[in-house]
Image (tube, rainbow, N blue to C red):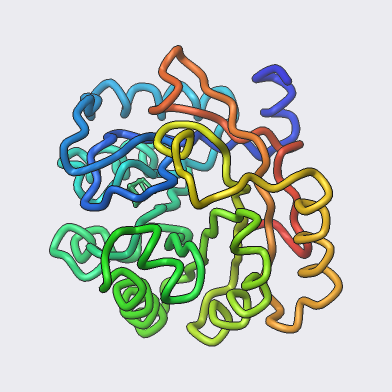
Length: 252
Ligand code: SF4
């Protein structure tokens, strides 16, 4: 799909991954992010890209990573998006939601999305930390109290399929309004993850149908099966075409 088509569709999302550095080193990470990963992009270059993309109709900027709350230029990117009237969403593992950097930016995000790989045992095992599940729960609580709309992003694999409805219930109990599913893909560190299995086409359909039919949690459910790299920087900038978004209720 061309940029023009995306602009005409009115749903241009620019996915910005400003740094591969992360405070975690998850087993399935498609960008092979970790505390040691290097390759951070300069804020002024990304700010210019955000402004140019807005002129093409990409009016939503999704800041992800690595962990975006580690990135020193985060305020510059939020300012650039504000300058051109783009909405900014933040994708985080939740650990730094109660940090000074987040506090300085609080209230400037349309939606904050917290990644959660399953119920406590599975999430902590994949993330390699016994406290990660509690971090997401505490971050959810902080966002809910602040009145910040937030969602849960789940990397769905065959092993977590059976927990999906419990996960939706949990997200709803915590105050999330969105559950976004990213089917696990064998890329980055995920290529060598031995305990995770990518869903077959039938399982993907089954997962979405289950939540559509039995959406007792009344969440907005989205499946994002495709992210397209642009600008020759596959891990750092990408777009999510409208055709790749499947929503069960309304737009996010
Ligand atoms: S999956 Fe997310 S939280 Fe985990 S290492 Fe990758 S970027 Fe960091």
